[in-house]
Length: 534
Ligand code: SIN
Image (tube, rainbow, N blue to C red; front, side, top):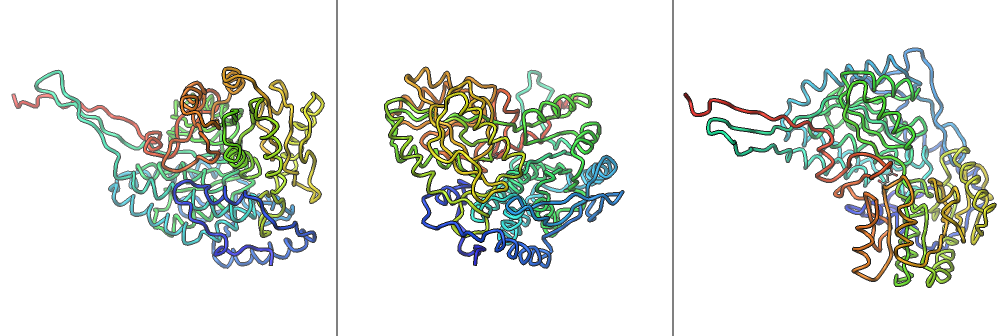
């Protein structure tokens, strides 16, 4: 049986989301199963049928609490990236449906924002409970439409659900302020109020967690949302929305539309009723959204691309560095914004690290995410595969060396071999831009200053990692790094309780943690006069 049962795969990853995912990267003894595509084809059909029965495989959008087709009946196909098979079709929507979703969210805002924080908190808690109760089905949907290994997908469900639990709790802690007045007869207050309707545009690499990280704080403080998930991965979003309805979150508070990205995006931007845009995705699209939001002066949060350096100093513990770099690079087959994009290794430890790291990478098992033992799924589509190929070719043509892998996997289609490149230089494409695939480029450096210079020599500033046993150095380098997140001797650092976000062109604002809710709040200063009565 190739499909992993949830009970085998569930791990406790309450706080650091990917603990389970991380340990999943440890060397596996399983061999690849050769007749893969036939087995998967059968299993995918059984799975799809089971998911339909459970009511969690939805193929309509959600507007104002009603499941809806596109008004002109158009659909788009959702593919399984591992096999190319069509899982189902979903509506290909545009401006008209988005306008209706905005109106529904606007109407729902009037009552949702008036509910007590305690009531909103209870609804979110119920949603969390349902997400966890349906972890297996949600994990299956994620693996089906996104491709990540089932165990990792289950880790994402826990990670994603944790944002809802965390913000269910934070809903009750949106405190205002009282300011000591400069005048005896005045009293000054600060109220915090929900910003209004939020447009949440989310990516395919975390089909659940990037939604809950936005929608959790938005709903908690009284906002309502129109979600536009990626057209590659709408099914998890729709299942989560179904569970939100089951949790009693009122119709219209959560809407999901998908289809023509630019029509939907333009409609969200143009609407004066949408008061905030929150986006995770490419820097190029983020810049367009930021410009577009200026016409109606909306609040904007952007979580954009990274180019994460992972610096390994001579004084690092090699085992810790290998484990950390492996997790930071190969999570989701290299398809995260916080994936180590450049592994920068000091010359004294370079050979030792390169050998140990390549050995660890060699043990990663590539295949369909439903096959037991697989830790590296497919890339999202052929375009992603071609991008990876072209980055590797560019590096090789400029003097990089293949230490491991370096080509399309024998499984073909969207599978690429876990790859390690040596002698990579800063000017190569792979050092300048996110490869978003399972390729680890190793660069060499001599001094600490040089490492900091290489690390900061990019427009991006999301995540960085350093490996060292020198405490002073860990502080010095952490403070010098122009990044929003830094992992010291750790490669997996995302959690709902810590602020996630970048500096420079990696974005604006923070998600998760006690800070994440501020992005959905406005401050109102209130001055009460004549307070002494005459
Ligand atoms: C991302 O890739 O944008 C999110 C990664 C994470 O939450 O750890």
